[in-house]
Structures are given as structure tokens and as C-alpha cells.
Image (cartoon, rainbow, N blue to C red; front, side):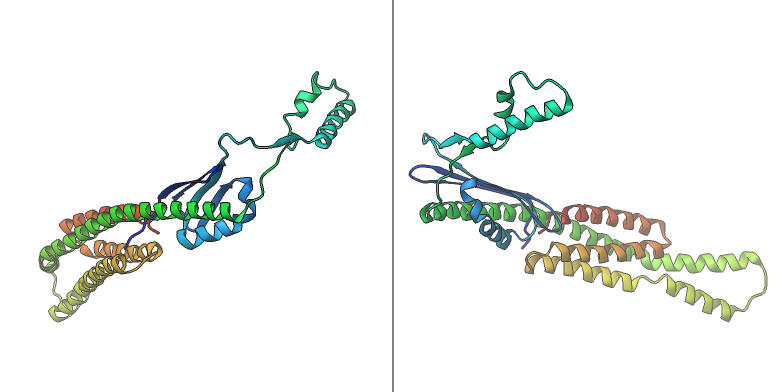
Length: 289
């Protein structure tokens, strides 16, 4: 089953005196890259939160936020007098050192600096943490459901494109025999136009050798196998984005070889159409987990 790396999940947990909100969203990435914005109340639990995310998400560029709304409850805060005094003295000292006038209202400047206001965060009790953890798990479930839904859409696209390439491969068969006959006729006609004596047996040997180099039966068989393997991997394995990417590379290699060996206008047009379908697969493979 295909899972997309694009995902979104949100959950809200109501507690008696506060509301916990969790939001998770992700885009494609080669590795797991988590950007966490976590309320100060849960900072001590950040590693546990990251571990929980890593177990479920596996891969992607992830933004997660865990916030707390205290409602009408006032959050206790106070001025950090020591920090204010230090910043005040530092500003005056720097102004004196640079021989410039200090700001007219030094105190208003100081109050805008970091650490001058201290917020007293409540101690995290086990009941609140269980509520927060429940909200995270609920958001993760919504996130995974979103990934499955997006993955189902991608699966439909891949099936359509793989089927199109398989149909183009069948069209190649219509021109393959005709192609060889035309090459033989062209070579024989060329020798006749030269109007010089030549060893017919040697000419036949060289022609057979040349035509064998243009044989595409192995390429057609390998390409067909790669197409089937792509569909099988997509159905039966999870977290298969990288593997599908490797199979796509092999499909591209066989299509390129078909093009280089075709020596036939109609077949080369088919190869171009195959490449177009494959490029669309490559674009979407980047979104597969």
C-alpha cells in the first residue's frame, strides 16, 4: 500500500483548566527532519515526543506544534529585576565607551530585551501529560489517515502510467519485424547501388551480426518485468518510496536502450511517449514514503 510523505493531522484535548492543541504536517524529504514547537510546559518531554513521531512518521520534513491554551486562567509572570538592572548598566556603559548619547528612555529599551519578564510555568503532572500524549496520538492517527488518502491517489496515478508504458511496449511489437526487414532491404539495396563485386556469404554474416546488435527482445522482456515488479512492490510493501525510485531508474534504462536500438521513426516516437509517462512517475515518486 502506498503512503504519501505529505500529511496533516490535528487534535484538541480538553482538560478541566486548559486546552491542549497538537498539529502535525509534513512534506517530502530524504530523511526524517522534525521541526518542533512545543509549549514550555512539555519541554522536558520533547525527546519522548520526538521518539513517538519517529516511530510513526518514519520519513519527511515534519512541523509539529504542541500548545496549551489556559483559557481565563492567568499565567503568572514577573519582572526579572536582576536582568533589567544588568541590561540598564550595560547600555549606559556601551554608550559611554562609544562616546554617544544613551537612549532617552533607557528603561523602555531594556523592557523589550529577552529574559526581563519571567513566566512561571506550572509543574507538569502525570494526568496532564497523559492528556497531551493522547492528543499527540490522535493527531498522528489523523496524520496517517491523510497520508493513506494521498497515497491512494498516487497509487492510481502510478497504475495509470505503468499501464500506459506497457501498452506502448505492445505497440513496439507491431514495428519490430517490419523494422528488421526494412534494414535488410536497405543494406542489400545499398550494395547493389555500389555495383562492385562482393562476397555474398561474408555480407550475410556481417548483416546478421549488425541486426543482432539491433535486437530488442531482451530489453522488451526486462522492461516488462520491471513494470510488473513496480506494481507488485506497490501492492505488497510499505515504506517503499526509495525502492520504487530504484525500479523507476531501471525502467528508464531499458526505455533508453530501446530508443537507441530502434532505428525506426515510429518506434522512436513511442519511446518518447514512454519517457513522458515515466517522467510523470518520477515527479510523484518523490512524494512516496
